[in-house]
Length: 148
Ligand code: DQA
Image (cartoon, rainbow, N blue to C red; front, side):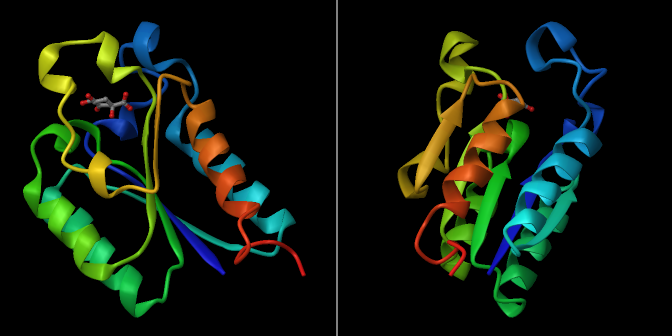
């Protein structure tokens, strides 16, 4: 089985971007850590970050061709704006967890609306970059991913 980790705009700046909100861990640290958790369970892992809506959509479409079993996505600011990414992820019919580093509900009103939450398996907010790890660990203990 396989997991794809997707990160949207500005998450390439993780570690240096508003560290009081997003912490000091870099996206490379997050991706490497998730990759090693998956490797230990014999699960295929891939990761992709883009600042461009269309590239994220293209990556979601190819996930279906690649038969990716599960997506963990932090759509960044596109969370609050992108009907197009929502339609892409709904269209490929791959289960996903929506993950946010910060607790978006404690922040500005415009971050309270998500185009993803109502179709996600689960939503993780406010756990910092540990949220990505929590998401991966959840997926790894589901029936499809469990070591036989
Ligand atoms: C974020 C929250 C979004 O509101 C913001 O635009 C981001 C990061 C988070 O991980 O907390 O870019 O998705």
